[in-house]
Image (cartoon, rainbow, N blue to C red; front, side, top):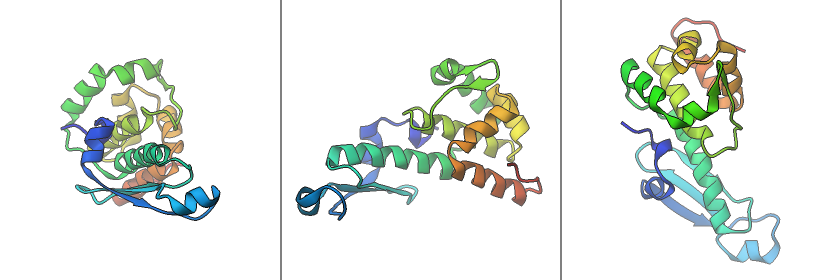
Length: 172
């Protein structure tokens, strides 16, 4: 099953309720008269994301979509067994071009980041939150995996919560 982070924008938007709102703040009269703020509600999961910092509704929609992908990556798990996940990661062009010599190269604002984060969180979930085992499957060093998760602090926080629930020590 495909994680929602991997869906094209139009497919993901079809799974959402889009709420347009007015917001106060910088931007003057334009901002106060036009519904440029966007709030997305993912109907299946109940997760939400919003953006209102831009003057353009289209720009706010792009930002809200990116934020929703991050929310989904962190909080929504896709049912995959270890073999499925390993095969998908092995075939993934996205992972092939971002991973070299046990290191991963991606910025947390890059459009591929939420999808990669979803893969990492699914992998951690499959191996009961054992970061060393997940790093091996992802062909990364443990330190690189932790460094990747620190780019989105909520993912590291979730990892530590889950580790404590299964009796493992938290990571820093």
